[in-house]
Length: 237
Length: 167
Image 1 (cartoon, chains in turn red, blue):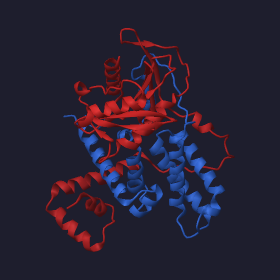
Image 2: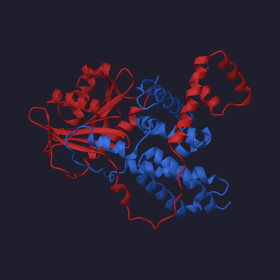
Image 3: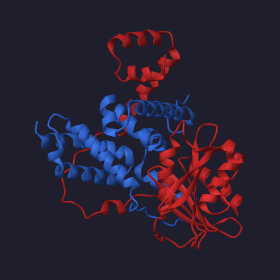
Image 4: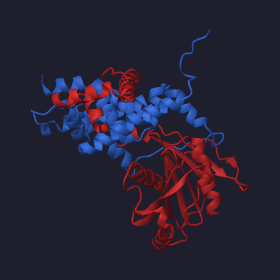
């Protein structure tokens, strides 16, 4: 039995003839039936968590971009202190979104869900990958080793970045969680501030160091991501 | 039922979907408003034979995608006492996400989109494919991954949120 058929059966998408076959198969496979029961429970919980809205009346068109400026990103800005510790930066000081973070998040969303082609060059060819990215990005590009944090390098790829080039490394842990490190040349950068950005469930740490900007992006718990970001930062110093 | 009636009838479901995707009621309603305004501007493009509801969902998802990808999409940065979890907790507390909603928030956007269309809004596979503009194989794999991920999160979750029986 292929899983797609189980979903189709569950969602009422199978033709009658096939339905009976799956139903009979499920009789003999209680663990699969338990999975379907879980799906039913998920659906019920989702419907309970997200009830229908109460309706809206149309309002006159808002000025362009109004709603989006009020985007509810929850963000912390901090600086990496001299000793690698965290220090307070000015209070409630709005800063512009660094566009490399947006690019990094977009690239993350595009490639992280890939099963077959998550990367262009596999980690097995890491030397080739690093040489290639170093050439195209113009710098000594290194892929940090995050094995101590449980994340192994899957590989990487070259990406466009607003007329320039960027590199993306992808890492995965044993439970399949993936984080990406997005590297772009930033020749006139002056600061090395760590910034944290959360946008629609996606989180990123962003910093600039030695003519390169880095964005570590993932949907993992924030402390984990911060630990990884510090690890990356220290290895790339 | 006329075009406007059908639009109006679809609004509560659009709000539900937008809130589940964005987890911020105010922003979600902005998205629905944007969608409705666009729908009314473009109503001449709607083919009377088509379903208004899936046409609206497709439009709303396109607007959302464009917003996510827009370089003008501005995020607000705020300083907090340290780079700890304060901001994160404030957000979580403000929207008071329930367990399922929190799990949903951890899914990739594409998987959330699919699961909500199928499991909550009750669209068929073919309609969901049209709304999202993806082939059926992609839809199926996202659906399978979403369901598997939610199961796994439920299994791994400690149970502080659930009721415990006291002897």
